[in-house]
Image (cartoon, rainbow, N blue to C red; front, side):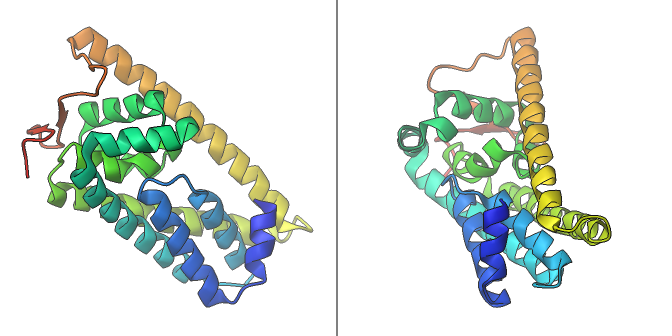
Length: 233
């Protein structure tokens, strides 16, 4: 993370904004990239005056919303075979176990999984393609996607910007503050995801919801309407 921040600091501000939007956008399409690391590094650079926080946040939100929408379109066209290919290509990030957890979240929470998935590493990558493959109605997806992208991008940027400005008075090198925050954020996301996956699995088991080996047959949208995979075009 420190190396990323130093590398970005040598680039013109406009290029930094494009990198933020590009990396986060491609990550949101379903390709495992360090989008959160790039955002954290850029937000900390904003605290030093190298870039502007509002432009960092706007670039991150734009990349998240557009990338998720592209991922949705690709997932809707490619369906589950696409997710299976992604799992074979990136087994550590998008393997069967990770995909099953993401599907359970969609089956349980519907489009809310898109909103909250923006704050979780696994769902941040899978939300768009998986929502498309499950044929979640695009209007509902776009609303949750845009809301989650804006809250995540602006919230993360300005939180780290504020922390970075305060840390300038106490730390000689602000990169150490960013490193600590990145580690804590990663540990927190991992803990939250495992806790939520365990809770969903326990709830589904108690209510008789079964997830077949090839994924659930339907996801429940936020308003309670069933979203059947493959039935809605």
